[in-house]
Amino acid sequence: MEIGYTMMCEQSGPRALVRDAVAAEEAGFGFSVISDHAFPWLDTQGHSPYAWSVLGAVAQATSRIGLMTYVTCPIKRYHPAVVAQKAATVALLSDGRFTLGVGAGENLNEHITGGGWPPVNTRHEMLEEAIGIIRALWAGGYVNFRGRHFEVDSARVWDLPEEPPRLAVAVSGARSCRLAGAHADALVAVQPERELVEMFGAAGGAGKPVVGQLPVSYDPDRDVAIRRAHEQFRWFGGGWKVNSELPSTAAFAAASAAVRPEDVAASIPCGDDPTAVADALRAFEEAGFTHVALCQIGEEQGPFIEWAAKELLPSPR
View 1 (cartoon, rainbow, N blue to C red):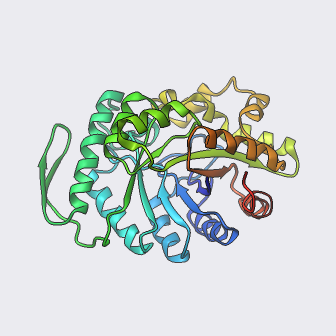
View 2 (spheres, rainbow, N blue to C red):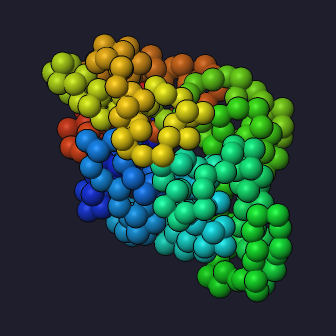
């Protein structure tokens, strides 16, 4: 299983994200994923730069580490034709190191363009239509399309890589797993649930990469690590079926108000014990994941990257 690094846009500014991605490559992380949001989850996180500008900078500042959106929503805040162009450009800038991860989005980040938040079944219909548009534009030439949810009028992506970017789809249940199995080159899931991997495989994704994410809160002082995780990441335990519907950072704060520091410590590795992280990684491996991106909680990433290089990456098992 390959271990990656998360550029968490919700907790760092753009220059810090580029600096930390360079450090992650030097430390030996195999790939790096980036969140693509308009808002942080909680006000205490305090950031949300434009992920695609950061990706362009990281693509030029690094030379080996794989890059991936984790994930972009191509159904509301961005039109799929725009996503196709952005992804092709990053693939060129990174010399083929880029994977476009897409998903059905969250109300928190997509509501800013107005028009209301569609129900989940509609969002999946929109995502499937969007993927078809993106792949058609990556194939070259002009694309005209009039679907149930999107229109494309004589669009073309003029700068394309020799090989189209890989496309991964985020899942949380049976319907999204069927969509991913039919259309994706890889699966994205944030929980180590074997059932999701099996449904993806049964729908056509057998043998394809499965990419997960593991939040950690490294600090030599475990109490400090727990406190920081509670302040910034207590929303994580809500689950995607809930988190995708909440409309604001205030709603996330209210929904997670009853979460205690000890609850967070029970679900997220906190402190400086590499065994705790290794055990959490093993759960992903046993569920069939091939890649897991570690997500250090907090704006200061340097100490975590140094610790991971010494304690985790040489022998992640």
